[in-house]
Length: 382
Image (tube, rainbow, N blue to C red; front, side):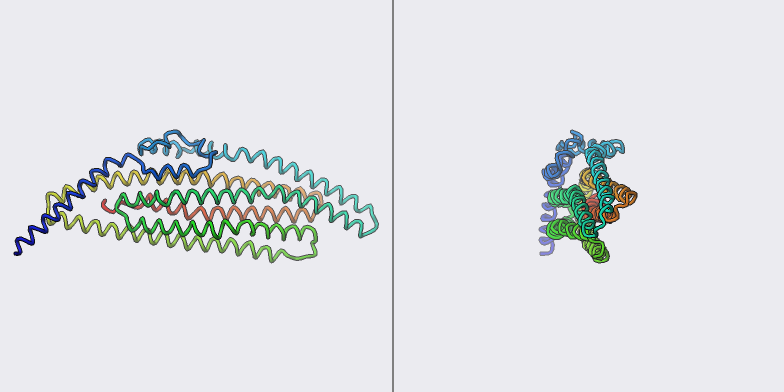
């Protein structure tokens, strides 16, 4: 009876190992082909970025995509691509600087005219009207920065939607099923936070800050500086806290899941090698080959995803920094011309641009961390 049970167990193990061998051989044949989800990642990018990508990046072969990724990783390519994307905004910043300086000169002239009136009410009326016209003109131009940030968050959301199934497939190909579930759930939670909290709150946040700046510019006697600073600091602190929690959760769950998958797969290989030494050794060697291929595929797609994220992130950051520099220069000109209320308004807008840079960088860090975990995670059956 014992011999019969041993024979049955041996037969079952042999059949299971043959199935694993066949599946592994099929996997090695498909390692040179990228999953179909990779195309969705490219489709989520804006058209101006797609036009700058190497043609080999759109191939279904991992070797050609690897060559295109190597071309993208070159410093000259990154600089040229980023500068070409930012170049359109350089002209806009120059126009913004010229228009704002012109408005400040007009404000200085109005300030000189109002001193000719001895009646204080008339002088205050002229000052109020000139400040109102200038501030509304500046705010209408400055709203472009808010639209830039909201557009970037929409692009980041589309990229995250495309990355969720792609990373799940790449984890599963290496046997990291638990890590795939953890990564997918973590990115899904980040997507919910990005769409429901960050994207829907950035416009009201900027509107409140600009309203406070306008009130302070029109009536300096109203002291709202402390309240405005409190709102801005607490908003960025809240974003940093949420993204820190998401990053810690994603890193912990993915790392622990990958370790759990690796232990389970190595235990199965050890048991197979001891019970059926010849077949088990062949399967182990074949799985080691598949593990190398999966690692190369993950590295290629992961590095490509990081570079694509940088191509969307860096132009936005540089654009916001250029706009912030423009507002700071305009504030210096306003100080030279003696336009105190306009200077306060320009300082507030420049400060708001800095907070927008912080919000964009904080939210992007979670996606970059998720892709970095994918690159450094080894296959479970390696």
